[in-house]
Length: 446
Image 1: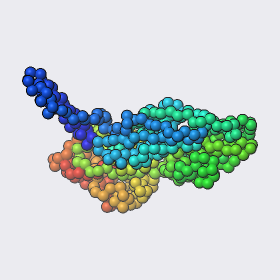
Image 2: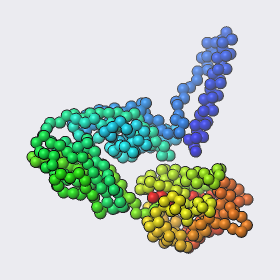
Image 3: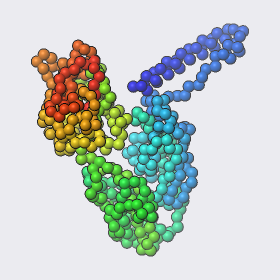
Image 4: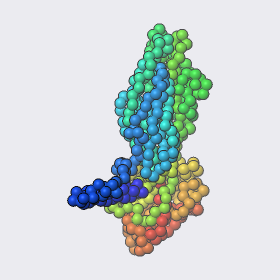
């Protein structure tokens, strides 16, 4: 919202400057003081600002591929800029791919392999563990404090050709993940080749680590935990016994009959969470949307999407929804059916404190821990619900307890709230509040 206001203000300023310039030029064309007039009307240059408020990559988004070896490429770029986020607070993430299919943040996330994860204020990164004689494509994505992202220009680089002494990992060394559960990850790769050893006789060892420190055979041996020990002619492995909602790094090392070894490209995979996470947005009046009930859900969910990005970017979630009742059919109790919220997972706060053992347990009239102690929210929040999570309807007014569908913010209307220091039914059904008061919106993600 702040960026939209800034953009609007700047467009107004630009419009005024254009009018002033045309006026001055018009006066000068009919004046003997043309030169003097123009001297005092030199206009400042205002840089272009993206319509969506995203950050601007530095130096036109150019990435430079510096030192290139048989197994590595050194990348560098100029820092980005943003209207609201200080330059040294911008974050960067680097991707690679074997194809030119990572030119946007969305494509990079879908098709790329992470070289360097989100890091603040960096202008270089080393892509290591690459395959000799292979062309790779690289991209840098910059992210501001509001979660807006922009991509630099894709750059390609071809690693130097190696001798026939070492085995060559297949498909450029790319490792892909298969089935991911809360405690396991399936890994897949393409068979390597060797000048002397038949492909069917090559041996493979799979490693994992909690850090990106297993990019070469030597580093994997020193820092990694063996997932699958040396096994002949395999192209898949499963890493078990992992922690839910946790990121791991994996690599595969191939060995020929002369004990020469090569490493694939490290891949990062996050296990599924065994919990539904709950957190809160900033406080808002009951005027959460100005749209109809048909599209009010999207507007209110956006508060939670923004809060997740800004306050809890590391939570292992792919789905984010507002924990609020809007209509009789779009209520908290109906969220599993409407949006696929898992019913069998624990409900926890952003720091992991459990408040319910399941979705059913959450809406049975009490919770295990109050929201304040679970670091979810410190003040009252808009629920619009009774203690079972259903849309709260009274005899006096159907929509009185949802600020008329969360569209008004005045003393004349009321919305049902929950409290944060109780574990009984009042945690979700604490009575109505005036809609001009500011209260949290709770969110769930999974």
